[in-house]
Length: 283
Ligand SMILES: NC(=O)C1=CN([C@@H]2O[C@H](COP(=O)(O)OP(=O)(O)OC[C@H]3O[C@@H](n4cnc5c(N)ncnc54)[C@H](OP(=O)(O)O)[C@@H]3O)[C@@H](O)[C@H]2O)C=CC1
Ligand SMILES: O=C(O)C1=N[C@H](C(=O)O)C[C@H](O)C1
Image (cartoon, rainbow, N blue to C red):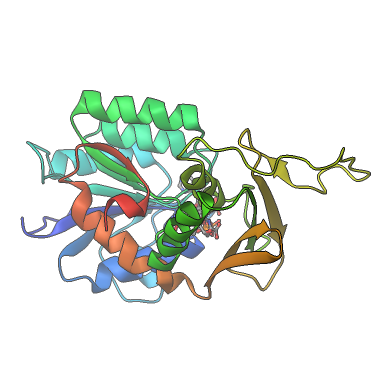
C-alpha cells in the first residue's frame, strides 16, 4: 500500500467499475485533498487490474481486488485510526445484497463508511447505527447525493403538512436492482415525520391488475416505480386537494450531479459521531 501524506483523506471505493464507482474514482482523483488507496469490485476477469488504466484516467497505483475484507484490513493497518478525524474512508456503490455486510466490515476495521448503495432496511439501519455508536465512529448512509434532491425532499416534507393526499413516483434506468428507490423511501419518511396519515380512501378500491396502485406504506403514501432504458434517475411527488395539484420533480441527467455530495460526505464523515442518514444532515 502506497503511503499518503497526513493531510490527504485515504479513500477506498467499492463497486469501483460500476456506473457510480467509476465516477467516484474520477472525482477522488481530481480532488486535491483525497487519495485513492483501494478499489474493490467483483466484475469477473478484473482481479488485479490497475484501476486508473481500466477507467482510462491514467495509472493510479491501485490494483483492483474483489476481496473487500482484505482491502479494509490492509487499509486499516496503513491508515490507523487513533481518534476522530483520522483513518480511511470507504465509499460504497455496490449492490443492496451486500451493503449491510460491507458497512459492518468497514466499522469493524475502523474505516469510515460513506454508503451510497441503497436497499438497507430500517432494522439494518438501526443495527448499523448501534454498531457505529459502540465503535465510537462516524459513518454516513446517503440514499441520494444530489443537492437538488435534498431540496425536493425538504419541499415535499414542508408541503406534506398542508396536503392530505400525495403519491410519489420514481423513474430509473432498467439496470436498477431495488424498488422502490432508496431516495423515494427517504422522501416518504421525511413526509411522514409529523406522524401524519395520507390518502384516506373515498371509495372501495379494487385492483384488477396487482400492483396497479403502487406500493402502500403504513402512512397511506403510495410509491410507484418505473424502469426504462434511457432514464437516469427522476422523481415526482404529487400532492392533490380539491381544485388543485402541486407537483415537485427532480431529474438527474448525469451521474456527475452526485459528486459534490459524495466529496462533501467524504470530507465530513471522519468528524461525525455515529451514523448519519441523509445528505440533508450534512449540508
Ligand atoms: N446514493 C446515491 O446518490 C446513489 C446511489 N446509487 C446506488 O448505488 C448502487 C450502485 O449503483 P450503480 O453504480 O448504478 O450500479 P452498477 O451495477 O453499475 O455498479 C455496481 C458495481 O459493484 C460491483 N459489485 C457488486 N457486488 C459487489 C461486491 N460484493 N463487492 C464489490 N463490488 C461489487 C458490481 O460488479 P459486478 O459486475 O460483479 O456486478 C458493479 O461493478 C445502487 O444501490 C444504486 O441504487 C446509485 C446512484 C446514486
Ligand atoms: O440506482 C440508481 O441509479 C439510483 N439509486 C439511488 C436510489 O435508489 O435512490 C439514488 C438515485 O435515485 C439513483
